Length: 197
Image (spheres, rainbow, N blue to C red):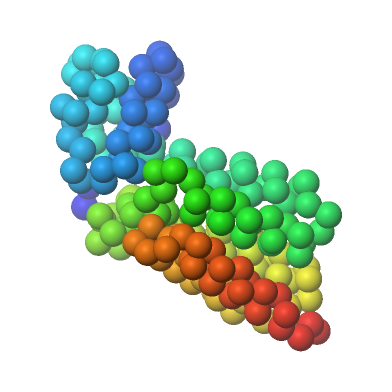
């Protein structure tokens, strides 16, 4: 198993770290993690090889930072949506609206986490473990909202919601984003229309 340091850049100059990570965010999403080599990352980031290795020490450390940063962005965005919504049902609808907006975004290539998971098949790999942590957080957030609206089986409802989300992300990239958007909205409406307790 690859051993990686979750924060290899602590207490070091932040500007190069940020530039490398921003470059990785674009290239890993657009082209795939495995296809983007260290030399390409160094060249596109306009840093030296020594700078790259001083900050990240390995590509796996950079992938850890990439997945972690995507998780942190999602947490911040969804928590803000929940705070700004009038109630849990409105929050769930806002999350769906955010998914739909992503499906229609130029350059959309699916879900960062599903894409990364497909490149790391070993469930024990630290990167897969981070993806699992993200999905557990997402599912728990949806389950909490469904519980608040009185869904009779919020855990199962959250499972259904996550599968609908995953299907829309994959189908919207590989197929028709309009059809994927409609299917996601219908699936969530069915989840929300379950008879309440």
